[in-house]
Image (tube, rainbow, N blue to C red; front, side, top):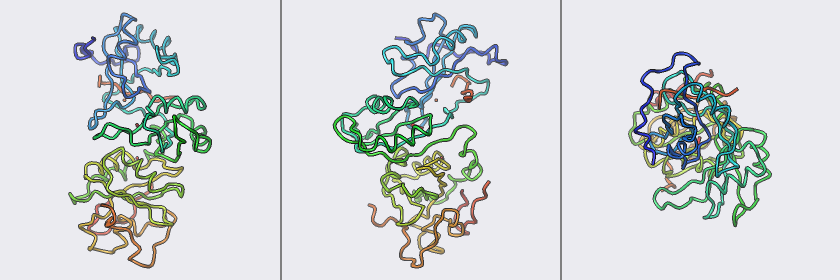
Length: 364
């Protein structure tokens, strides 16, 4: 078996486009590793190395990687021959290739993603089954992921499907709701979507910079503002559960905001970093730290409810309830290296925060 560690990276980084000999490859499934890429391209006789990018925390495939060839000409031949061609043994999935850029450092696939949540999945539904269920009707489907319980190794009964075409995503939410997948009808809902490297997420870069600066080590609560009316507690939980164990989720009745409490602060930090500014159910959500249970007695109780957004609630289209007891606060009821990155495909100020609240201002 080919050992990717034995293939040394280039000793000199390219300085011009004509010197680039590395290709970016995207839309990789979770099981596609370096050995898989070698099996696809080794027959060219000029493959030098391959690297699949993985999440540094979970170790899961991020969906992209890099393939280095002996020369620029060899890489160009592979690009022209294989890009958008069927993958051997998987004819319904196509190679997605591009030149790696000259910039250093790893970079996620930042082409647009339009994602839906799929619930009520049967126990035998795999990533491939879910993918094929949607790809049969929607050519822009990029991938599918069934969420697996890390402890039991069994499916949690829900997953996500990614599209590159927003109109197909919108159609699928209506047309596929109640359609059988394996032995059970699916329940479709909105999920977080990204707009691309120059999309709406960038507009929140400044406000997102401080989302991991909460000083309370016990605060694991995330405030989610700007929710679409179609988003439910279950939808919110399923989106955020990708980043760790959820203790409780609550969307107060009639409000366009919600709260997600994690079991660990690091999970909340990752969710804040990844989901602030994403589209969820057709609207762009803004995340900040919610008030932790240990601080719920300090300050204005409405600030606890709104996670520090008490003076900016008009942004989300709701008004403050009159009865402080109506505030939902403490959850008492909740027990794609190689030195390359992808070549992209062809402010609002945060509201004023209370004195003791950090100012803060988001794909499988």
